Amino acid sequence: MIVSSSKKEIIRGFLRVASLEKLDLHNEITVDMSINQLIIVTAGCVITGIPTQEIKDSELHKNDSISLNDQIKRNAAISHHKQYGDKGLGGNDGAFLLENVSIKYSDNFTVNLPELVLFYDQIVAIAIGNPG
Image (tube, rainbow, N blue to C red):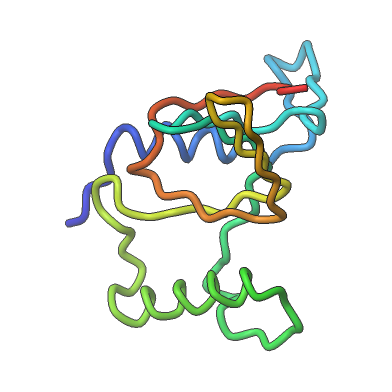
């Protein structure tokens, strides 16, 4: 049995919430999530971006024209699925894809990227908010 870590499950929860367009709180308040991004702190920088949807098993063998990053992610998912079936990766192993990424370093240097693969074990802290 593969056991996921608490850290990984918390991050996955943030990924799910950050992927929503709207968030209903107790059927009383609706929050517009479209202005929010994930804010991720690593040992060397702060990364902001929007999580992409995970590839579902039903999408693994589609041959649509897709971006290089999506093709790499799809091939990795197919390879993992062939080797481990439906079992997830244990512990903090694994990664996810962010879009519209901004990486800010402590010396006020910023790098903007269209996509970035981020590994769970590199994350120190995570939040959802409007970094602007």
